[in-house]
Length: 225
Image 1 (cartoon, rainbow, N blue to C red):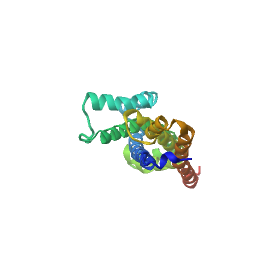
Image 2 (image 1 turned 135 degrees about the vertical axis):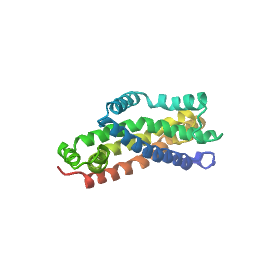
Image 3 (image 1 turned 30 degrees about the horizontal axis):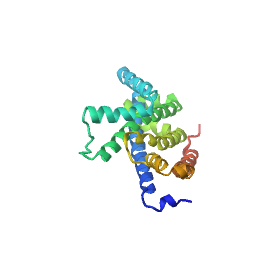
Image 4 (image 1 turned 90 degrees about the vertical axis):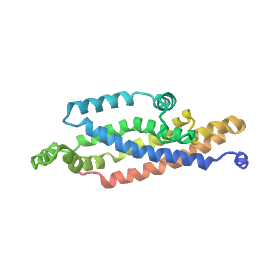
């Protein structure tokens, strides 16, 4: 049934490994950049609030494919930015794909965190400020730890969406799972359903345990109010 895999022509595990790497690097970058954006959104400085609001509204409403292509065509092919990838086009494409995924999914992390920040009682922040703590100290020591515990489930949804959205990286030639699936469908046209089912199963294996694990974590660390 899966005779086309015996030829050794297709590196399915290698393609899924690239997908996993895209997901991990992009998830870490999105969490960091999304947290900074959330801090800007609740900052007392009007300029930072305006930047955070404009960034989230513009990028979140821009198709991911456009962002990925803009990173490749704009940054690399027009401006010559290689992100320290030298002349290796595979490395450059991979890093540009991570950059595009981070830029896009950080907006969803930001909004999830902002909703978590809104669940923290205002009195706690006021009490911390009354003790002489600065805005960053109140945010990092009092508000964000509680906000993160409140939004584990929404962040899990962002991570699952990010895993599936890594397929867009195929648009700029990154050899992840969707790119290999496209190649296999092209050359194994008599096994389209098997190829599609195989890659669908692969993505279920990647996303289902993640959702179940983070759902369990969400229940364990939820803040009781």
